[in-house]
Image 1: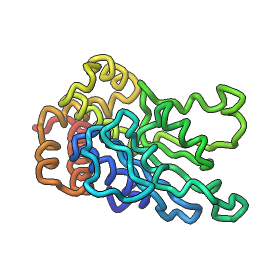
Image 2: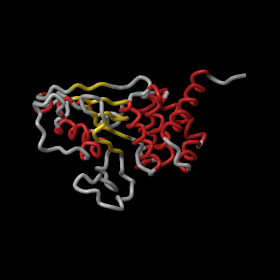
Image 3: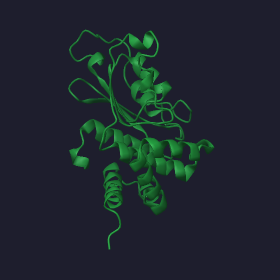
Image 4: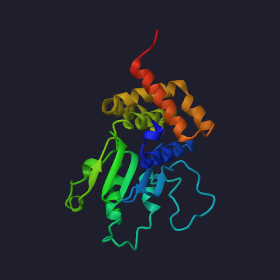
Length: 230
């Protein structure tokens, strides 16, 4: 499956898996220009240690409740001095993310100047794409939002569910799990299976690449779809 994915989605999954390996929420995001080239990347860094060296003015947010993937991807852009009249300007660029943006990240995306949003999986708890058009300001820009991605939604949901079950983030496990079971039942079931077999933790310890993680998760998904063999 990995080689069938567009480079933007591959990069999003790499960032999401890097977040998982680091102990943060497994969400990744990238920004692509009008030619499909990746111009910025970001991942959730809520539980990350701060960078050992200051990379300059576009240092990612880490160890903070605001350290979300989309926000870090947008902060990696030079968000000033743009000529928005150029053919390949930020107005033609797109934000890709593994999970539907929350209110914080949707607002940052809307104010960034980008006009296209692609998300792989719905977030039944914090997902806020429905806020587009909800106020006069949020109706001004011609935003195009696309999602979920039919192939990636169960997989991205599953990794988040597995991490939720393993860490019980903020004590909200049961409420969040019920929402995911209703919105993305196949992804929730896959995440529960991944939690039971403990393999993602082993891949995390081995710092396996995202492609290897995806291959394993896809194999488990096929097993669930076909049922037990005799």
